[in-house]
Length: 249
Length: 264
Image (cartoon, rainbow over all chains, first blue to last red; front, side):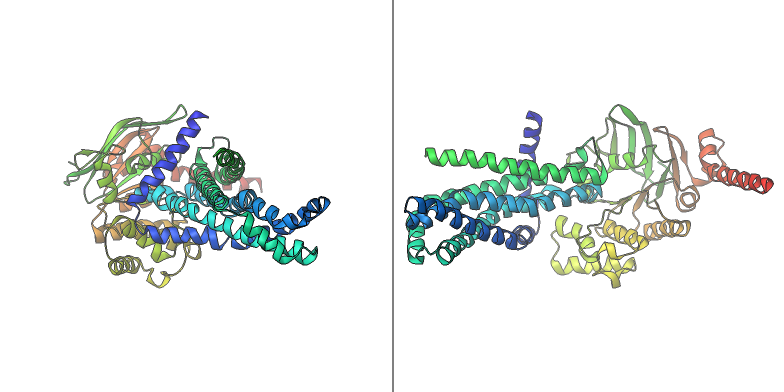
């Protein structure tokens, strides 16, 4: 356990250190932004929309018991901004781009592409891993923001259009409820999840050959599974820790 | 000194084990500059492990590798210098399947030199042209035949104009005609670009025809080293056993066919 955490920490530190020696870095980062951002955009938007729809529906029925339908915008917006957007967007990104990253690096390890980079004198961590870590720090908050926007519209659709809450009441409640510190919490959480989940996925794929119980395609498959499971657990654990910090602060 | 040429690369007492299983038991030989040096040996004797130790992919448990008089430690300046002056052709080619042929060849120039974009493109296209792949520059490796992939991997290995090129089983999985073509390619480009080639293979006839010197790796040690003519004439039991394995196979097959014809 301690050895694993130490190895992981060294992996992340060496990846960031390799940024200084990587050529054509902006191009590599932009490519990662495309892989994590543009490619995953539809999934995040769809999940955001349906999360908002469900929040609007369930929230309306709970709040109507107390005659507080006017607080629907508050409930939907704070749920999305503080918890659901960073967490669910991160889980979607792990499922799509994180698993792809682990599988890609695992295959590159198996087919000696990583060894080829090293023999060429190219730092494989700088070329393959570091640009993904940098882009994740920005893409995950951006995807969380998209999730919030689409989710709020989903809440409005079910709460106002379908269930009859006044649209002006809904949006003014949203405006009053969300403060700067809520947005800060959302983006800090998303950036934290992005950095750590991408690092976990990259670590699992990069060292797919260290698995002594499997080799070849099975090792890649096992590495991808571990990447998704560990990253998802990390997101929930980190969510609790970051939330505790903000609640305490 | 070997073959009249000064020694470029010296392998001294290299040992390597994996999980308690010893693969290399003190390998010693010297590679003269400007030659094709081939390490022969049956499958599983550690030829690829030896090459990966030389390339710095694996760290030897004992012994040392000396390049132009400087010991290649894993993270030393000499190792970095060796990497700049060495090309490696992997058994699996290790081409980047998401990059085109041109991008694959340009990769080491982009990442390890400060050449301009124009110069990188010019040099990469030149390397592809020399290996008769220019018309396929926009294709991905998966769209090329096995032989073309091998040539593309060689183009990538030589585009930085290395002084040493390491070939890991360059003919693995190829039919006899393609095996001949690959060794002819190594010989042709070694003479054109004047690099030193270190090849590991188990293809005896092709290696003997193309190499300036050969060594035989058996049970983790070098049991023969010399010119191909000496290898062909050697009475060393391991050399004879390995050299005659093709004839032994032909004799066995002949016996089997004979038995079948008798039973009919």
